[in-house]
Amino acid sequence: MKLLKALSQKGKILLIMFRTKANRCSVNALIAALDKEKLPVDILLLDHEEFGKLLNIENISGLLNKYERIILAFGFMTTMLNSILSLTSSIREIKTRYKKRVVAICGGPHPSGDPLGSILLGFDYAFIGEAECSFPHFIRKVIEGEDYSKTLGVAYVDDEYLIINNPPKPIDLNEYPPYPIHRRMFNYIEITRGCPHACYFCQTPRIFGTRPRHRSIESVRHYCLIKVKHGKTDLRFISPNALCYGSKSGFTVNIEVLENLLAELHSLRKINPKVRVFLGSFPSEIRPEFISEDTIKLLKKYTNNKRIIIGAQSGSEKVLKEIHRGHTLEDVLNATEIAVKHGFRVDVDFIFGLPCEEREDVEETMVFMRKLLRLGNVRVHAHVFMPLPGTPYANKEPKPIPSRLRNELFKLVGYGKLYGQWVKQEELAKMIVKLRKKGVIITGYPVRPGKVNFKNYLKSNMA
Ligand code: SF4
Image (cartoon, rainbow, N blue to C red):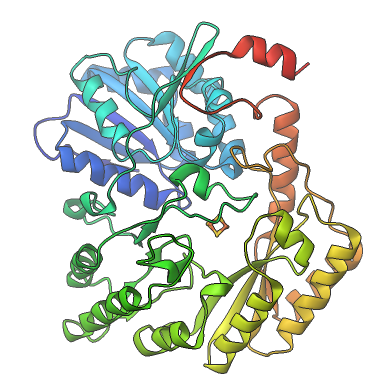
């Protein structure tokens, strides 16, 4: 539990934010956006267990003796839905008791893909897409006692209507700090937002748009320097595709800008020789067609990466086409060969159980994985397909993992050639499908600005 006092005047409002390891970077970015506006709001950060303990009438009533209003804020992914569901009956109870003084809001990948289902869990408002602009605006309106329902980018339910406001303009990353500087809450630095590739299983382009927006080199350096001065010498970056930095379209490499960025980061070693720069490994990865002799030499020259992560997703050309990956198997093979040749250890991402995957695709994927593993210094990073709201595959069923493949995956784990959360994700995928069938996750309605009678929609679609 962490209480952050308002930066300017005494906080009149208490904002209680759900913060876990999984949503830490985006919660920090929102706190930074609030700090930028110097809003008189105290912020309490709670993890799941702490939130569970706090959410009862007695505790909330105690807090309401100190604060005029309380905002309960939850940012979450679909994979976190079970934890959220364990808190929603308490939220509803508190809301019934303190209708006017407690506001419950949600945002993040899940509510962005399914605002209606999220609101019906007991939230008053769902934030759709990025919220650095809309979130502080909403909080300001709450503080000033004004109407916050017109906030851009939020959705809410009014009687039988789902109302989705117009979205705010996509932000310029340079205008927003990646972490709350004054509170010394450091995290990875987002250098690129938005992805033009639009793979069918992925929420990223649906949340952040298809036009890549890059943080300028000056801004990246500025926030890295602050970290370095505070003894944070490992520098890691968030990007949908690490080597697309500086590319206008996001489809091609901008080698000059990429080198300028890396050289600038590398130069931070003059300030502290312990600085280590990582790009193209956790928490970002690289699309295969972005790896060439030129780009890999840049990583070799300027970064401390021993490992890089390449997104392949399937070993079947047919599946790659169907999921709209926009690259070929040859791209993956070529990228892996180049990276291995230059001394990198390579982790290659695969997703199993994709809805379009047939028996022969599984066989082809197994053959392709073996081919990559024979290059040496290669591991498979295994995932299982999960049908995420907001994606073209939101309504699809994951294909079961055939026993032949399952045995092979376990064998590779034993050889140290495969890692990942795929077993857990298989369970999560089942949970998602179950919640969709129960109507907790609602898909197939248009998530776009306007007003729709959702009761009619539910009647005709969930029957
Ligand atoms: S999987 Fe990667 S490349 Fe594909 S849309 Fe998502 S972020 Fe973009």
